[in-house]
Image (cartoon, rainbow, N blue to C red):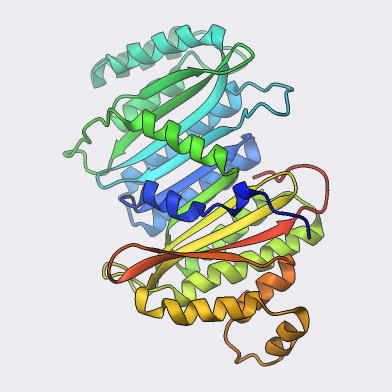
Length: 374
């Protein structure tokens, strides 16, 4: 077993929880975006929008804007040959109190910045009627290139959302800039969200958090047996590695997610059929890290901690003996260590007088040269 980097040993789950604790859904992806990634992200989002029982019109608007954002990334993302240059795009979907917030970020050439800035500023300055007329004008007179239409996607996003774009261009290297863009879709048309002047700054901070911890994917929201299957299917498609490692990853993911479904403590507003959970995938050059988190009552922590320590400190023979009796507690934790061949790490971060956030991390060796494609 090789040494695991300090970055992967960080208690990232609590930091992510702090970032999105006021939202009921957080889904973020960091990596290169292609058609398969787009399909996977849309599948998971569609399932969660259905489970959230949003109005059909809201679901359609959110889905449309997501499609446009992701297509913009695939059409316009720039790629450099420098392996040490982080050129990963990001996509973030958040369900806030009064709106859905959709954010994308990708590299573009510096020569394209002013043209895109002018286009967005013009769209932001228009009324809904002006946008409608402008869309017709672009359709009839717009010029089209190999990378798509003359801003029609941006126009339609603004029309569907009924709000303004927030954006920023951050210079990087190789005459390229990272283009961050956020737009909010109100859940209630009579309750238009007040523009958050710090939205883009917060996205940039979150992006740095993802970069520093090598996070490729983060899901935070309600988990049930229904969307657990959807999440597992999508994660299985997105982890592109050897068959042997993929099987281990799947087994560990099942144990960790089932642990949330079966044992997480539910807060007052959560139904019996679902509970809050977090799922994070991160990596360095040699390891893949799978993290989950859920709420636990403070009164249960000593018992759970004793069980975690007992299994974590056991050797192979001891785990084999415990595994022979299916009634022995902690069978899932035994499977995690046996499959990963690494001790897991865990943390309990107090949230209030009743609950703590309980997180557990599993580490796997990469069994081939190359990266995990998320």
